[in-house]
Each structure stands twice: as C-alpha cells, then as structure tokens.
Length: 141
Figure 1 (tube, rainbow, N blue to C red):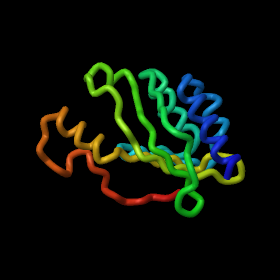
Figure 2 (figure 1 turned 135 degrees about the horizontal axis):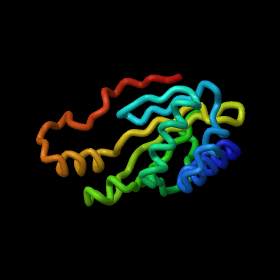
Figure 3 (figure 1 turned 120 degrees about the vertical axis):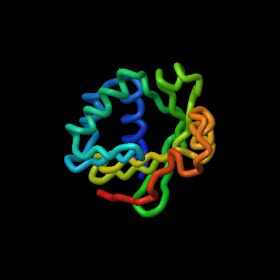
Figure 4 (figure 1 turned 30 degrees about the vertical axis):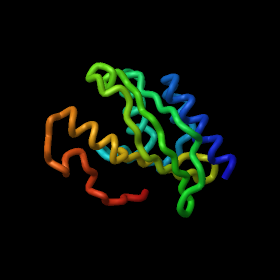
C-alpha cells in the first residue's frame, strides 16, 4: 500500500505543477476520473481534463491518501484554482477515493464535503438543498 500512496503523491505533485504528461504516465489504460460533475474514461480524455485544470492552476493540498475500504485509498484534499480565487470562494475541500492497481492509477473519484456544498450554495444564492449534490451513484470502472 505504501507504493500506492507514493504513486498518488507523485501524481498530485505532477498535477500541482501542471505536468500533464507525467500524470498520464501514471494512469492505467482503463483509468477513470469521476469528479462528480463529469466522468472521464481513459488516459486521452483524462489528459484533456488535466490540461484544463492546469490552465486554471488547479492544485490540491492535504495529507497523503490513506488506506480506506477495500482497495481504495482515501483522502481529504483542499482544492484551489483561478476560478475559485476570482469568485472569492478561496478554497474548497473534497473527499477523494483513489484505486491503484499494478502500479497505475485506475480510479480517482472526488466529491465535495458538506461544508463545500454549503459554501457553493451560499455563493450561488440557491436555497435548493439538492443543488450541487451528486446523484450518489457509484460507478466503478
């Protein structure tokens, strides 16, 4: 499991510096990124997402992932990017679940924390409690 944590940390370091090629090199051929607002399957589509995130200076901070349920690693990450800074939201927190298999990342799933959902609702002016909620469906690769 230590190797898996190291791989995830290497991925985060590469992503934080905008190194899409390095990130893609750590992905399995059947990798899936499920970020709640979209699902990206395969290194090509994930690379497109990562290029977009690099353009808005998307970074994560927080403790390294830790063993979770089954084969998953879990983490609580603080997210920052240009759009959050411009909208004065600052930073948001997400729960992350990551699966590593045979030395490659096969799944990254992130979901906003309850505090983040409240912050997004307040910023948008909505009173709808379902706003920004995920359907709750788990779609494993």
